[in-house]
Length: 305
Image 1 (cartoon, rainbow, N blue to C red):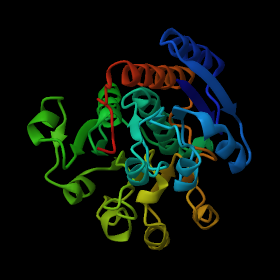
Image 2: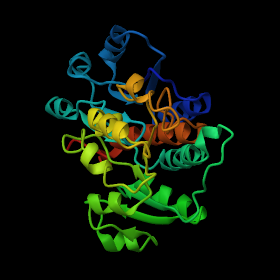
Image 3: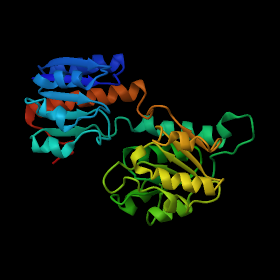
Image 4: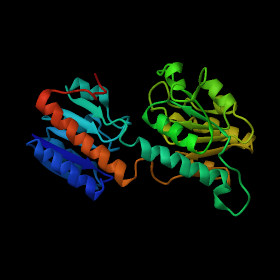
């Protein structure tokens, strides 16, 4: 089988070697399309691919139609909203992700951004500390649990809410289980978003939700920009001079948010998984999952059932 690694944002060199080693050990052929700049390059490359490893690359119906031999796509990472999973299913193409491989990297970034924020973006003026602050985690999956683990090291009081995780499982991690999303925002000084971008969550975090936060509240988003109602949040930040918004990817209305100097910061590109370790872990996991799929039909991490 031919496995194509198609990455507009390439894997680290050590990850490439690890992926290559796994694929060849499985008895398959491997090809790379890295740093491509035109969609046609991707369309040409997938024509004879049996399997595809991607990062945040957009896999649209057009791409899927150009790949008649394709049987499986693995997104090296957790979020897979860049792939048209429903259309892939209609073409009998399995879509998988590699949950957990980037979790620590994203969680560490949360605290790098938070320290930067509470110290007033290192502008030389007196800031505050994270110790004893109430941190709310919205979604308690792999990343959320790692955020909670690190928060305890800062002596923060940690709360979480996840509609798919029972309260007792959250409490078992030494974390307070909020009753619901609104309770989390009302209770906490800082809320960290880890929800996926779905039909239910897109633009779900906006004026009314964030306005429940305490004076001096901080909203940090290392999930997806699509979950933010940007118009609503802009309106709220104009009204409430005490709120701060920190994001691991520029919002669509970055120029509008930039007016809130000292209360807004966004990374120019999504940086959550941008570590050598996360890069390597996710890439190798993707290769192993493809090997397992072709060897035994394993679909453990399928997301388009």
